[in-house]
Image (cartoon, rainbow, N blue to C red; front, side, top):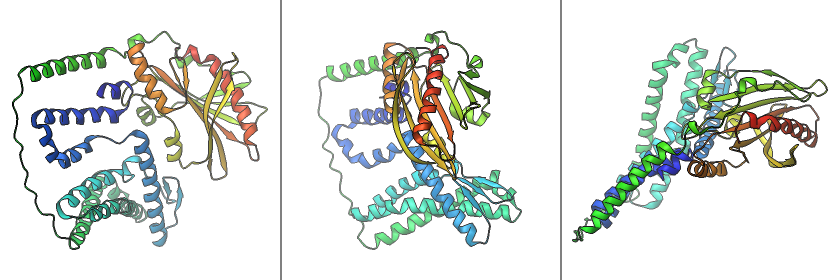
Length: 425
């Protein structure tokens, strides 16, 4: 499981493997008596991070909910404020509710606390369920209050009290406050049912086994361990990357489209993890549209160093998806090419966004199939290099979707024709 997680760049599988190793060792030591430790093992499972798509979805929704609540409180307090996605404009300054301040750092630990309080203080199942249901609104409310307080400090001319040490300290205070509320709820629920009676643990004891069984098991596990280490270190490697051109030479003129190259900030590059990239905006004199092209390339891919679908980036920027579909057309060589596309809207601006993974000669639109082929190619080809091709076109007022798809199709055809020089097949 750990090998699959590393080679497929699925961090969740990597940590599930670590958890599984711990459970496996304990099962070897205690056998079926391990059932007495089911709850501690459940708590131990909190070392496993959520899958990225779940994490992004929760982070995005919690950010918007906390931002919306804080904006409502600011308006009640008489502050003129404008909200654009996760950006709160106070006029004198802008507050951006970033992922770290989304409330997810409250949500997951509060779930853990709810499980612990429910286990120790609540006997009935419905009480434990109620305690868990309290967590989502509680994490949104306390985080919204924290953002509201940050906004008021800026309005009062004391922004230094909302930064650095004070910012982190306020987060700790708010979390302790949320924990105290959760504890209070558990105490209230406890009054509706008697505390659970302690059940004696009956130890079934141990039984003798033949020496060959543990010896054979130990040898097999050691061989698996050595083979796993070899696989993780030797199978995928940037040394197996075929020759390619650097994106520094990527054409700034493609057909009738001319471009102006742009460069990403260091913060974005750190979150993108790319080894090479091209970012440019393409124009045509006879069209009102512009197309933003971004192609990050990865010499190898693993956990925290891989291409990811762009939906969460768009959602975090305040865009709303109003339609999506997979769009297939023929390339200049007659091969079918599929794009995953979506219409995005923010205010009066509409955007046709599309992307596909271009991995070792394959065009893939499903993030799950992309992970699958990463694992397969790591073993069969010793390569995990690849790129994400992302093209986003602004739509003119009144422009139909069919016309927009036609223009984007012609542009992507031309990009795809030169792509193999920069992303090896």
